Every structure is written in C-alpha cells, then in structure tokens.
Image 1 (spheres, one colour):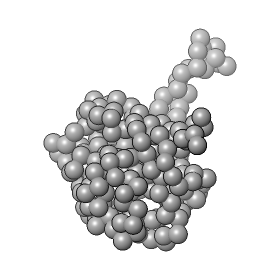
Image 2 (tube, rainbow, N blue to C red; image 1 turned 90 degrees about the vertical axis):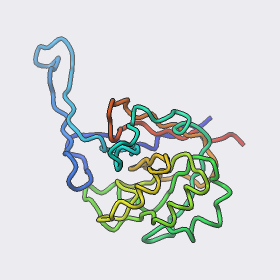
Image 3 (spheres, rainbow, N blue to C red; image 1 turned 60 degrees about the vertical axis):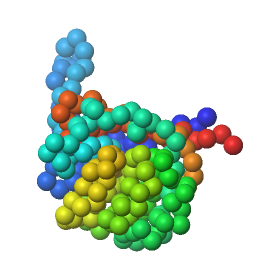
Length: 211
C-alpha cells in the first residue's frame, strides 16, 4: 500500500492568498535557552496552506468546518489530470470523464502544482468555471480539490465557491499534486476541528489502490 502526502508544509512567511493573514511560526520556549521543552506560537489564517472551505466561507449561515461530515472527507477518490489546460476548467473539459468521478471525491491536477514551488503568488493559475462547478454538483461529487490557493479565478465574484458550497460540496485548496498519476485512489483529509471555523488547514493523503 502506497501512502502519498499531497499537503504543503506550513512555515514562517509562506505564500498566502493576497489579503489573507501572513504566517508566523515564533519560538515561545526553547531548550537551548534553558526552558524545559520546545514550544512555538503559530499565527495564521484559517485558509493557510492545504485547507478546506466549508459553506460558512461564503454563506453567513453556512455550516462551519467542525460540522462537515467525515464521510465527505474520507473515501473513494478520482484524480483527474488536466495539465494540458492552460487557463480554465470548463464543463466541456470535465464532461467526457463525468462517470469516473460521479459520487466520489474529485481532485483536479493541473499545471498549478509547479507554481506552488514559487514563493511568488501567481494570478494566472488554472481555475474552475461556474459551468464546470455546476457539472460537479450534478454528478454529486462529495468533495473537490485543486492544486492552488483558490479554486476560483483570481478576482472572481465568488460564484464558483457559492455553486459548490451552496450544494454542500466542500472545497480543498492548495494540494500538491506533483507526480500524481490520473486514476482511482482512497483519499483522506482531516481539517483542524475549529468551532465556528470558516476554513480549516489540514493534512491530505492519497492511498494508491493495489492492482
């Protein structure tokens, strides 16, 4: 059984979506200076690194991250390779393979994974369109993930998020899909259980199915 970590590391000063809180990892106590143990302070936003967007992210009365069913976050998954797409993922690109991800967790692998290696935030990342999101909702996708800091176009109106989250479909952003092949996997994502959380950083893991 092959277990693959597709999360990004959280570290001091890491890249965040423009306008989000910056990340700081600060020493609180250190053995080297005579303290009994090493303890650090972690300052960051709820949408730092690999994280989940629950409905509360875009809806005032939406479900928070602590109440998302684990059945949506753990289960059969399909990784769809869309690296050939240069800008946007539309219904047209998704439709031919719709049967492969129906009722499953869907992870979108794009050229964005290469951008994650750059400390600079890129505004020209590959994103999902509203009609693409509508198809995923129609196919009853349990969860959708993508390999950059937002699933929606930079400067977008929020319609893609509202389409997915309004249907109860959580979104995971900032997955590192480098080297991951298209196909079926078992997937697990466990966000921090933040009461009232509009987002939740966590660890994303793929388990490759044995042939």
